[in-house]
Length: 318
Image (cartoon, rainbow, N blue to C red; front, side, top):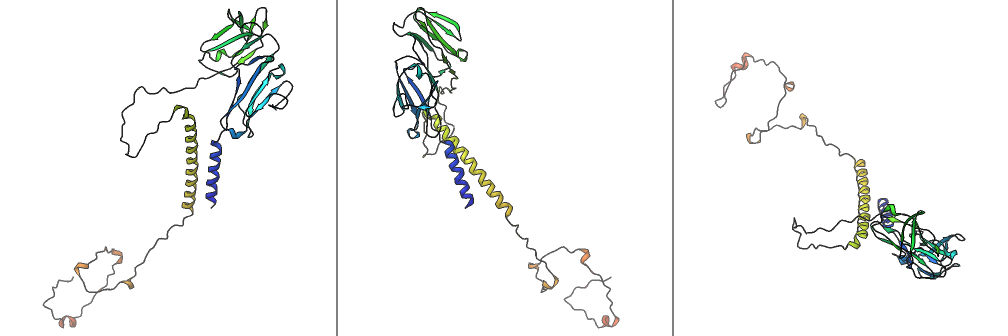
């Protein structure tokens, strides 16, 4: 009973360790900077709707306040806000169980120039376009772009594209339009590109024949991460159960009593003698230590009275 309880506990722990709830915060329009009065839509894209995701933020005035608590209009896992400079801060999604999503930094300015840059991390190797935009005039004015305070280049149309970004392109970016002003600075994050195995160009011939009842299952590439997670959990559970079984088997072997050896002693009283039968003859080795010698005396009278029998073969005795 005790061993069964231990196995059940280990099984529950394995299931809990394999359960993860995740969410991703998205911003629309996709930008890290906004003009005062812009409409901004924040959404928690959740994998598990039962987790109860709530949008929260930290600003210069408030900490960990949720949507609807003095700011924004909540609608399920989304939040709509009319942006003001006091709305500048860090936003994230948080569930009742504690896990949080990615964090985004939003800046709302009362000025006339903003830099539209990706609000989410950029994948290494992708192209990134930056737009220097004014509030009242068309967004095709010449602009100068800066990274970490140093001038990168000047673009006549207000657009700048960074091709095949790498980790060296991470930094603090801003732009400037002559006669209109300078935008706030925004940080651009570059993440590593996930490694993928290219599919084989040709299918090799099968090396073995499958049983008639077997079927092959093709797993879509989008399901690889969940399947690998489930297989990993099942494998870890099997290892734990195997270790418990080995411990129980070792304990049983240690406490097992050795079987008593059965020995029987044969004494001369247990031996009976009968007539000699060649077919039932049992041969055994006789040691010299078991032989006892004794003198035999034959008197002349016994020799005279002795009559030879015709069926007996005699041999000389020395």
